[in-house]
Image: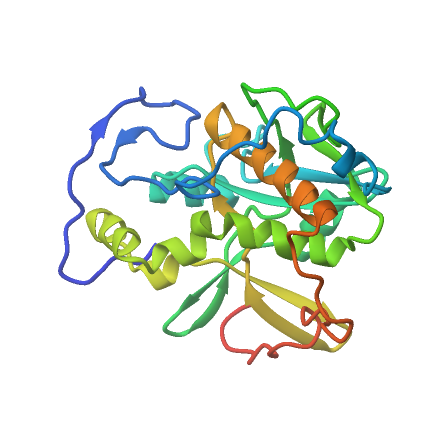
Length: 281
């Protein structure tokens, strides 16, 4: 952990007892953003039962929005590592929030573990890999509201489940989902005035709290920001908001309120910048 030179972190008032598993154990005055922003509103109760939607909706592939964390080592609880240690250090509720269409969503965890998603930080001497990012597990959404009547979105165990419209690709769905949650992105929030003030209160350098992932393609390595990390509280309002976002995204696409992207728009995830090789990998 790198602190701002010449600064002393302010003492924080404890709100959870020592030894609590909660990510936020001390009071901080920072107002966390909530996904979707202040203007989020649920659809009308009849949104999925009216003829306008039913006539246009053709269900496609099952997709599972998920919430994941890592670093809770049950065999070595004295070791702070992974995303849990990031949340503890920042006194923020932080999770990976994305979606998969794998028939067994647990296979997505295997991929995250292999790539050690979000394991790197960028320091003055280069990228540094931190421990504990090889044990990703799903966390449970705990919404208080129910899906609307006829909704293609449901809560299936730990995960949400939905049938994407037949003409909405996985790639475009995920782009639209992350766009609608962008206000609560961890990497982005850290560089806002509120995020910088929060880090200053803790004596941390905001840029060095951002998370990165190294992707390897044979001998080629690419590093990108881990942009699927969000400030998110699973119990209650944030899960309610995610349900609203998912229902609105599908409804807006089917009704035609979202412009179709041109066919030439491609996924840049395997084309972007190479890793310079600085630091450890």
